[in-house]
Length: 191
Image (cartoon, rainbow, N blue to C red; front, side, top):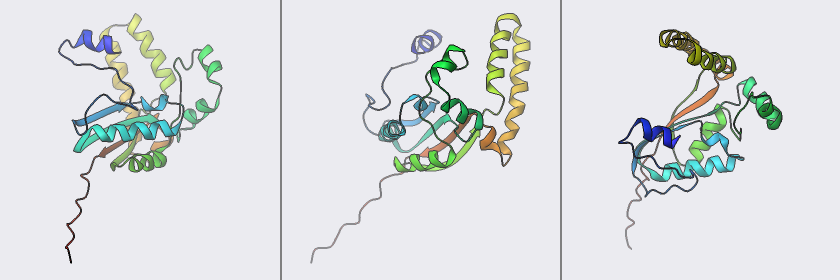
């Protein structure tokens, strides 16, 4: 991923690091985007540890935009209880699937990491398995315009994000949170 990013954007400073121990000073980033990365850890504790580390490097007032696989979606919940080796052999899941959570738990662990949650939502409401397979086929065999039309068609599924059932249909649960300044402690008066 880093190599591809560097080759496309030569001025980009791309650094590979463990999200649980970031090689950055405290309070340096205005925004952090984590797009379905923390859900590849084995345990929810590693997700919380990573969230604390992301909070550490965010500036006060800085925003965290985070997505994880959505366990409130029955397809994701089923995928997570089925044996990974079987799904991997069948080429249904080509990558390791780790711990994740639904919207309520995500809100709770982001708050537990010391961030203020502004919004929790669900994204990618299209049937992802089919969408990815068709998109790959179109990339190989169709022109760019056909591929663009297909992507526009997939975006129509995002209307489901406004429905009360959005957390059942969204592939990812998303959170937008900010790092609030630590409350200042008023000085105490000496007797």
